[in-house]
Image 1 (cartoon, chains in turn brown, purple):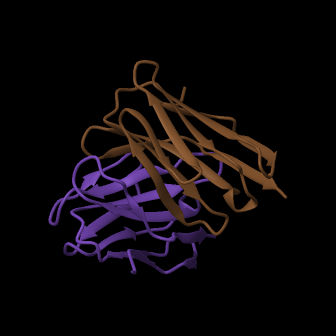
Image 2 (cartoon, chains in turn orange, green):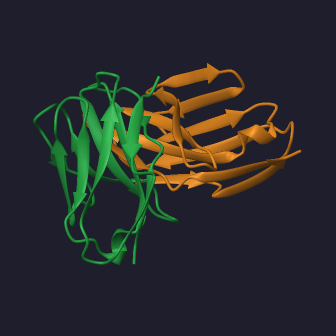
Length: 108
Length: 112
């Protein structure tokens, strides 16, 4: 069993839909990261959180430490949101453990 | 705003050849990392450097060596390339502690 599990693996939706991507982890963590990887391959950090909720534009990330679960929400989705979204958990001072990613496709 | 710069972007090698992937960051970060990304698998840590002059093995270090040349630069060397090392390689950097990592654009490496 992977230490970090994401669901779903693939998600296709229509423009404007509310999107939820889930991340569950089985290890103790100091922080959780959400990353975005565009079709060109570049990886961008979206959020880093250790408790509660963070919001940036149409993106919202939440974490429940007790349940070892985080969600990434996208409101009013747009085709430019199409990307792979990656959850990663930080163990200790340096090590990041990554999920396999969720491939999101938003159709116009 | 260069951020993290990786060279080359693409490379094809024959089995047994050697090469060095270069990475440089201009954000004055202490920590630097090398990852590989393979289809169906998450990013996996090869080596990291917590500060200039130190390096440590990650999850998949076999077949690789690294050098933290100075605070800016962290290189990854394949001494004798194998087809199993065909992958996309990412360099990243961050401040010490629970800070976001900044990624380069990746190097797509194929070993024939």
